[in-house]
Image (cartoon, helix red, strand yellow):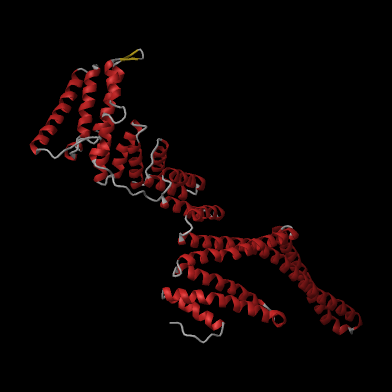
Amino acid sequence: MKKVVLTLITVAMAAGSSFAQVDKALVEAQKKSILETVKKTDESVKKAPTKPRLWLERAVAYFDLASFPDSTLANTDLDASFKALDYLAEAVKLDTKEGKKGSIAKDAEKLLDGREKAYGALMNMGVIKYQGKDYTSSFRYMSKASEIASKDTVSAMYTGVVAQLCQKDAEARTAYEKYMNIGGKDVAIIYGLSQIYKVAKEEDKALALIDKGIEIYPTSKDLKNEKFNMLIAFNRIDQAISQLKETVSKDPKDVMNLFNLGLLYENKTNTLKEEANKIADASNKVADARRKIASHKDKAEVYIDELKRTKAKLKTVKPNQKPVIQSQINKLEASIAKDNEELKALEGEKLEAEKAVGDEAANKAKIAELNGKIDALKQETPSFYERALAIDPAYYDALYQMGAFYFNEGAEIKRVVNAMDMETYKKEGKSVEEKLAAKYQQAVPYFERALKVKKDEDLKEILKQVYRELKIDKQVD
């Protein structure tokens, strides 16, 4: 789980307490007074354990101990705040008769409201432990504070932070979700929780949270970029294109957005190509299986014809030659039997291939549909790079990508040429070679301009390759 990095606010802000730079002697006097009060209330309860007011006073004393900003005092009893909660519960129990709470019980419960005594003590200890990098203990206090102050966003937020720091990922998620549900708006938490959803592959939740963040911070480019990145990561290319088109319509001079639109179109094109290739590959497996079966049957016919001739010969040869002829017959029959087994296997492969490919006519129609979409995307893609270059003629990424676009189209044509047999090449090779050269020619000016902007060694090698393909005698500086 990706951590949300935050710095805890000071004790004064987090715990709602104040600890000014006062005279050291006064601080020591305060510490002594708190310890004496704790000791006094402990003794009072022992003497009269059924009096609710004594339990309430004891709880207040322990809360004061846990709330003191100086850790040298607060750390003397790490369970002070939790003990105080137990003492409050005892006070309430003793002052409740037949379901009716007395004034002491009501006073005790007030200490649990919002950011009252209980909250302040727990948060103070949580901050102290956080500052000491004891994140497990910090979580113990923070989470209890958040439980008590159920509508408090501060404790919910920092419970999530320290939970992550001590690798309590499930608890961190719960705390962040609570934070958002009770009105939290911190952009770091919105981002962090969205990453938790993203890692958990809960795509809809991640995107919904980012959308909520954008609703709160409509001018945040970071959140919009994160949504765009998520759509790419989730392979929701159509949504990403729609979002970016909307962004471009509002800011048509942003060259990066135009460039990214071009990349998305190329990404979409490649996705459609992969889909078309999968269908074509499945169809090719069927065709290949059928060719193997036909070839196998042709070979089997040769053996069968040879077996017929050999059996006929057996009837006419002299007795002493019959063992040799019979041996030949046995070998031929064994070969035919083996061929029949291989043929069965090939027939099985063909059936499997046919099941996988499905309806051949429908597949041809689908490939035609996909190719139509690919062609449409290819026609529109360069326009986004050109629009970016019209705004910034020296935009290296757009120059490079324009060159790469035409270079890659050329590479596809080259693969077709390389796959041709000699007869096909004689008939079609020249016209295909001309198309190949035309694509490389289109790539050259963009690569050359890009190289002037940035001396990239990889680009130099690509340009050298293009020059060789076009038989251009030119140095690449």
